[in-house]
Image 1 (cartoon, rainbow, N blue to C red):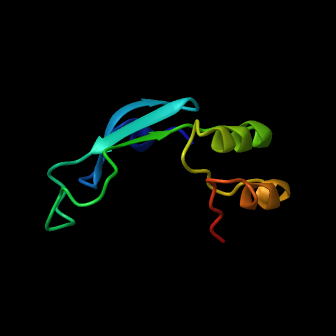
Image 2 (image 1 turned 45 degrees about the vertical axis):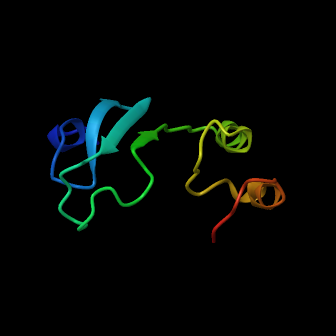
Amino acid sequence: EESFASQNANGTGPFMLVSRQPGVKTVFKRNPNYWGKADPTQGNVQDLVFLPISVDATRTAALISGEVDFVLDPPPRDVERLRSTPGVKVLD
């Protein structure tokens, strides 16, 4: 559901909203002023790009090709294929 909160930055989390195109792409960058850790340089993630890929086969292909680094809830029929793909790790 689209609302003010879904279109505007809110809070002071570990990442800051850079841009948002609903249904296309959302980009975040590390928040250097995040208060949640004593050392804000901890970790190796500087930027996050959320790409909603609605077609299962396209999402799986993007993971296998390296176009994306992470897929949440891969299609169950592809899990065994992903387990046997070098460089891909499936976490249950």
